[in-house]
Length: 427
Image 1 (cartoon, rainbow, N blue to C red):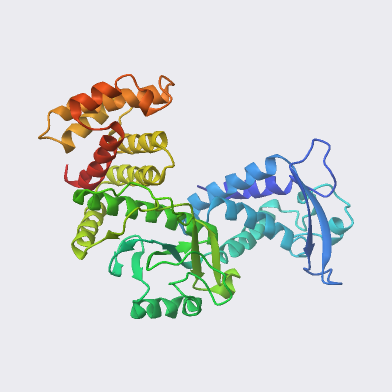
Image 2 (image 1 turned 30 degrees about the vertical axis):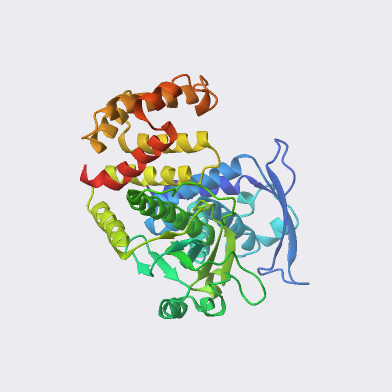
């Protein structure tokens, strides 16, 4: 990616910012306060701008191109990237090193591009690019993202991969160590999940933590995906013990996380409570995670670290859809998410059924009935996808399946995906 291509997009963006309503229509109109020199009175100057419809698309293009040009910007999520670009333009509207403030304030020209102080458009784009880069850098810091794991009993554990840790509320040493980097942790109660003023999320005896670098929202998204992988892998190993691990209770589980900033002055945020999505289904019984189970999970991550990129990509997507299946609200959603997870692991274009059936046979090599069972599961998947059945109970071959395999399709697809995820690197 050449920097001149980015400059071209920046120039194009300034042509889509108007000081009066454009004749061709607009996407949004904003009023904002700016206080850059040379105008600074009564706390600042209120300006009114119109963004045309192409403006957002150009912003997204800049984000994609810039992250390709500068890998350090990959941790900036696209939404933050675009909002930062727009905010930088607004903050520098009266910056006499970039724009002619008179032209903007008195609306003597049509667009932001026409208000530039420099005739040399390359130098103009370069100055804006430096300002945007500086603003983007200020959105990036280290974050500690925490999510409660009620009814899971486990020792504190530093996985050593993906910045993931398990933290017991009574592990004073672990919390004190984190508070050295994330200062506000010391004022927060992990047992209640709240500060003294009541602000926070649901508490728990055990927390899943992820240390991750990026923007406030991007870090939360990134941490959420890493946590989904961990929980899917953890439950794939716990499933060896049997039991009703996927049976849901009537309790509510949290969809919120709390995150702490390592540099609150830089990003203007000490901590943030926001939705990360539901990551754990409401367990019906307490789940005990032994140190042996954690060692097996650690071994899985160690195998992943030395695997080929294609296998890592496949198993990561599989883990995400496995987690989506774990938390799904109904049987169809759960079945479909589990099947998508199997497709992520084994599926091949133009021979999806054969590749998935072959993959399932590999994980159950000593049970010849899985050949037929896998084909029947794919048949049910096709019925649901193409509208042949609107529920698993409506499937014409359900009675045949239960009589011949003494099992249930939903249980079997869950067993298959948990086994496949757990064994993938040793197949």
